[in-house]
Image 1 (cartoon, rainbow, N blue to C red):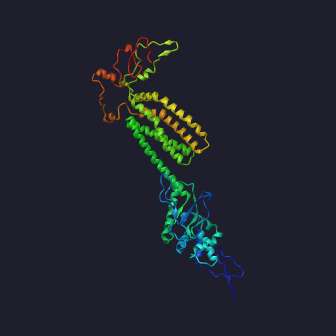
Image 2 (cartoon, helix red, strand yellow):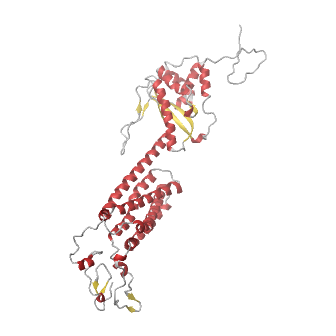
Length: 477
């Protein structure tokens, strides 16, 4: 008997052996050689470390729940797909196409783990056919020594109920969420294209990866957080408008609150380098209302006081007691500036000063008490309490600075004047129903909250919200 030995080379220089004759160049016609050449076109030199690459799993035969409830347990769970029949040869071909055909370069496949390739190789070595009509028995026989078959097959009641394939791609899971979702869309198109070509028994493949879940959750959290903050800010604007009855004051406080929330987000993401998660989202949303409180008090008092009634400021400058003995009452009232001579800037400064004198100390003491209470959380061993402590500490300090430093300066520069917003818009002062008809009494009433008509200046002391005559030997309080 005669035997012929042939040495074939593909895409490499041909070797010369003694006694062998070159037969020429021939194009390969074997599908097995084509599959081998196509596998060589995958990513050969990865640009991403293997420990940071994304692992993608393509699944047949499992149906994921379509909806997830907002609260409570999920009534719908995953289930097996009754239409998937791995024993059907066309279903086997559909699964094989995922590993056999040349993948698009945009999928960045670096390594793949396919049980179906291992099964076909073993069947051909034993001179058996693939696809197999006796798929379950073949798999049961070869899976004893095949790790991919043990990992990627779901066997229920002596039948293959579901299968999966694994792919490792040259794409980092640390990339931005938007980039990961764009890469996911390429895989969506690839899997959908193979499903369109497959038979009905194997055309329900879908892919999943932990990176997809994290990216979608991150985008959903960010979008929902922004929407929630906007809704909370608009609600706060409405409440501030009700209390201040001035759209300009409400707008200034709203802008200041948004600046505080933005600074808090900068502290968490940039300075502390925290990953955006449930704690960070809750902190941003929950403390929107907390950051409104201080500034709202200042704006509310600023809108109530009147610069033309400067009795409170003058009273604070009068010394009513001394270590050496009682001080006699003044013989004449302190010098005051005529209200008509005050400019709008001076009036805003006086109103801002009055607001600080009334509420400034209360805001400062509230901030110190909150900071002192939250400082103990920084020593906690659980990360959630430590983060909450930092958030409470920072938002309290930012809100205090915004209400005691930034807001008064803004009110002095561009705050509304003493007239109401309707009067400013209409361009004239509306008549007050409580104004007396007597012009002399009107001058006494204008600018205060019930100032009584003035009496003789020698017998009066301007020390409060109503001018009170001084009795002999009694010091004003």
